[in-house]
Length: 313
Image 1 (cartoon, rainbow, N blue to C red):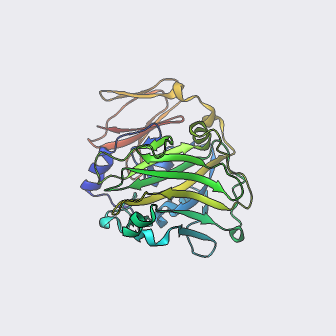
Image 2: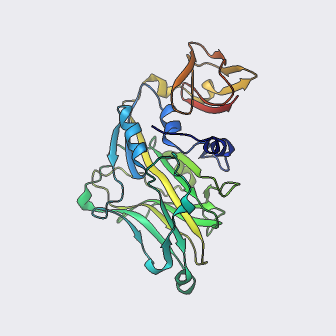
Image 3: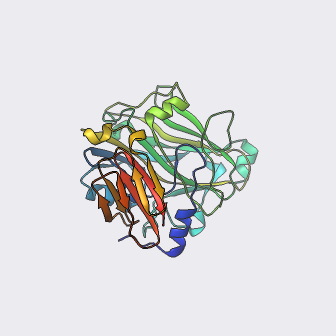
């Protein structure tokens, strides 16, 4: 079972949105609480811990374990000499799990002499990676952390033979590419991003949403520049796609917007409001669009229709 220390909760509370698609909590529990109860989901996991897989499976969702296995899925270092492995200074992964699954790299002197550094998560045809269930409503999720890097280039879903990945930046703009998310204000923070593929296409109109039943290419590609000592760590890299969506998924976001005034939680137009603790347990609910919160002081996740909001009481 997942254990939270006070420091972990404090860090989660300190997360602030630095771009439109950043999320306060990049862990899997916050994602699962926010999903439409009337839909099923398919999770395609690329860089995660075991906790992410088991929690999604426990909800009855389909989970495809596409993590790096060095047989049909790889984390290639294209300029191999320019990176060293980075252990994230022993910092916990996004779920504070006992089995971290993140990947970390740091540039070295060879990056300076060669003028670049980079790599990517590559999937081979022999793996039969089926993305036919993906659509514009599929969410792409990634968490990243760095204590030194100011900018990195990010390519998302660079399919073999199709020159149309989403070309974006982390941190500040890299070669003029749109910024997906900035780094946290504290270098002890993971920054989480959760964005639909439709919104990726809005940021980069040439992007083609993957739909092949045997997809090959780089799910995620990174360029970290040519300055020695720049580190970057990735975790929580997965997609989740709704299938058989129910009526609840069709409710307009604006109709269920969550606001908190004192101990009153209001979600105009919602049929119900649910309050969860950080362990994902339902602690209070109301069959209306208003709820009087009677929980102890702490952090909670409120869900109303398709809206999710983290609150601190």
